[in-house]
Image (cartoon, rainbow, N blue to C red; front, side, top):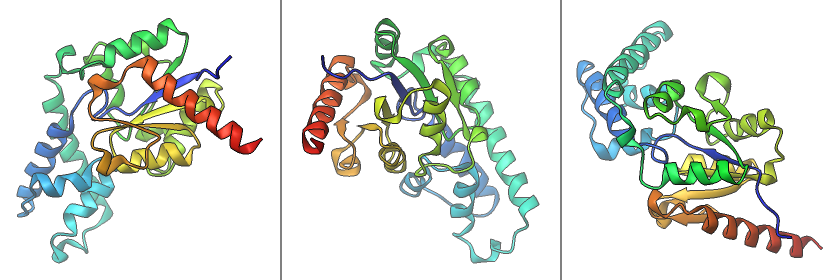
Length: 232
């Protein structure tokens, strides 16, 4: 019998829902207060990394801000999060990306465990607002890990909690750093987005509507079988 995975670990932003626009608007507002201007192209660099790392990238736009104290940085990061929280307050279940709820239902049906592996400290709040909380066996957010993506800790923490070997896990990501994290954890990586950006993933789909449970399993099994034959 073909090998069957035991857990799916989902990224949040860009996979389950798209709060990237809210992050962008919140960072843009904060940058404007600092006399800086950021655009959508710059915002691409902020995807999938932590709040403090994002802030550092924005501050680096103005060398005169390099001497800012850690307290001041913390204050700014908190301010950005407050902007963001007022924006996500309007989140509804209709903000779930296409195909995601069907995929979660299929995992439950097939007794595959489900975890969330997010760089967001607001992960639980967002999943609750989307009405998806009951699907998740575990949520890993920025508060539960020391090293953010591309370090594999987010994914290995989820697998360890679920008691599932890493090779039995499938990680779903839309960011380059996220796919690197899944690969570093020795899990099967599914990239959502352009092949050009995510060619290092084991399997790539253009958007979430193409995340079909049976197709993912087929690709996972094909890779596992190929791996077995090269090691035997």
